[in-house]
Image (tube, rainbow, N blue to C red; front, side, top):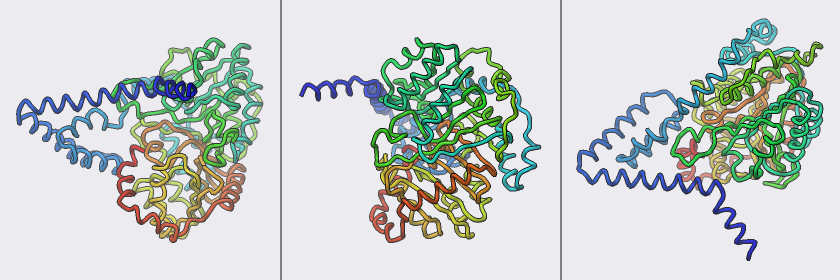
Length: 509
């Protein structure tokens, strides 16, 4: 009984619950204020209604994701008195001016980067066009680099530890989730040891992503050991839309010429040391060579947005601590997606990959909460004879999102898309592979949050041997998975109304 009371007390006094209650109190106060104002006369009611109509007209005319606009138009229609005011407070998905200004400052500190036109000219025309688009958005293509693909987190983890132990000059890390256990304890010990020996160690974690699982006094412990720590976008008891904008990136940079990215956070389920939702399948890539500089710039830009430093990008060039030439294995283009830029960047890359496919597209995604444009692109690609295959979880981590994912199956299957559910458990990997030529491995899910609200990152690989490893993993994973049929979709039809509601609410899930 005492143990139960301690657990309940711990939950009730947790930061998440306390902040949640404070936000709830603010919401209640807001609704009471609106209700009180409407008692002063009909002109108040008319004014609020007119405001809601103006907001709806504004939503219809503005650019943006249709699913997000439909959600707000319906919400304002249901609550015409306060819907417009709520949109002004929470509806605009653009981040706060302060956050946008800070991140712009961090980017400006890095200066202009050279063109990779000569590299793009060596690639297939269609892929080079995509590479040019990505470069025009600020991310170069690199040649003198190698990539290693890891089909499981437990395969990547020993190599990551070895590379961290060998670090001599600096370690930069960014992660969405950090949780106590074998994985984090091993990494933390190395970070503290390296910082004590004079290695520059910077560690960034997302405050909301880590809430409830962040080790107690982590920041204090790391800072005392000499590790520089940044909590991105601290979760505060304030009604603010900027709380939606999280740093979902997973990046490790070591001495400027080794980098890791992929779906793995720093928690034991990602390396199957802890059982959650069956077998946890996640993937990662290790980048070695000049392409690491793309990830280095991402971490420097974020860090310099919130810290006044003397950083100069020249200090972190790959050849500064590795003067020897790097071997070449195809081409690598690291990139990141951000809600702080006016660009639907990550989704545009996925759409472009679908449009250039001639033989096949293999996709891993834990969440298939797609908008109309992505759905039509998948169907159109399959209908023109391309073998489109998508692997989703067999055991979900979020029931609502799982139901939403399954609601898209029937239309996709009828168009010729093959959908597999990963029978052993949960697949958290995020990847695209097209025609043995180009592939993407990173943190970017196929849902609204990843594509529009979160900071994300990925490595696009062209004509790399790692693509063959990714292809083999796709084939083996599909063999372990169950092919979904139209017959399976019959059970989903009984929930069409519920599915329609979920699709409407998908930007919130």
